[in-house]
Image (cartoon, rainbow, N blue to C red):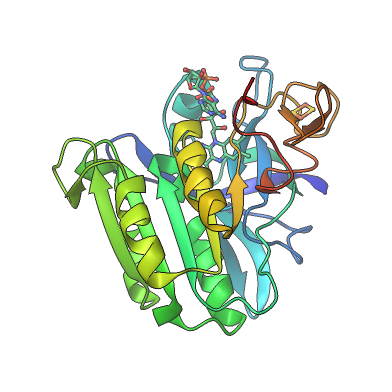
Amino acid sequence: MVQQSAKVLWNRALGGAYHKIGLQCRRGMGRLKPGQFVMLRVSGGVNPLLRRPFSVHMPIESEGRVTGIEILYKVVGQGTRLLAGVTPGDSLDLLGPLGSAFLLPENTRRIFIVAGGIGVAPMVFLAGHLLNRGVAAEDVTVFVGGRTSSDLLCLNDFDRLGIACRTATDDGSAGDHCLVTLPVELAVDGRQPDVIYACGPLEMLKCVSGIAENRGIACQVSIETRMACGMGACLGCAVAVRNAPGVYVHACLDGPVFDLQEIQLFEPAD
Ligand SMILES: Cc1cc2nc3c(=O)[nH]c(=O)nc-3n(C[C@H](O)[C@H](O)[C@H](O)COP(=O)(O)OP(=O)(O)OC[C@H]3O[C@@H](n4cnc5c(N)ncnc54)[C@H](O)[C@@H]3O)c2cc1C
Ligand code: FES
């Protein structure tokens, strides 16, 4: 993990509340893996004081070397509003890469990737990484869900990789008119994936986890808890350990990607 001043290469509005920012990183990104994140200080001043966590959307490569990262972000509050205002040539304090990555279990052939809303941010990097590791594009199915059509992001990126993408919206404005977990549930018995990777709202993760668990399918989830420090110092990102009442791990250090077997997403039954 490295702290550095990252130069803003671009900061583009994508429509709606979504933006992509490119950051030049002079060091530290050589071993970057999909699922890892960075903590960004979004203002030069004291307000907001705390860095904000963002997944690496894509590495930026030059001559075979990772020279920066791109972040896909949604404006939701003060910090991300400030981030949307930075311009090329500005510098941002960046800490990272941090946290765990999505892993490819041995003998994996068929894969489901499930993304809800901005949870799609780390999934294009993941999909490309899987193909580089020898997974066939036709063995990967991506499910992208959002509230409305403008929340369905990165579809062209998956298309470019040759990966089939199913979409769903809450309001029916694009794709299936349902939660994204319904097409997952309908497809899972036919396709029989060996592993499911998921990132999105907690309720979506719970549902995906239930689908995987009922069928004994391996499942890795990226948990986007609120994080104040990103380094294991504040205990603000505690996640309960499965079958160990009162035991917690840090989403920032031990996660954000967890094997479903490690953590307790559900309240234990009485
Ligand atoms: C590991 C990790 C990776 C992330 N990756 C991305 C990413 O790639 N792109 C992206 O846009 N966002 C990502 N997030 C969420 C992002 O960190 C928050 O949206 C951001 O910190 C909000 O800052 P803010 O000052 O704009 O909003 P605040 O003023 O802090 O909050 C505004 C609203 O957003 C809610 N909120 C804040 N943080 C979170 C969170 N972590 N989860 C759910 N709701 C939250 C608050 O409850 C509040 O309602 C990630 C979070 C984590 C922990
Ligand atoms: S964010 Fe501070 S301990 Fe994890």
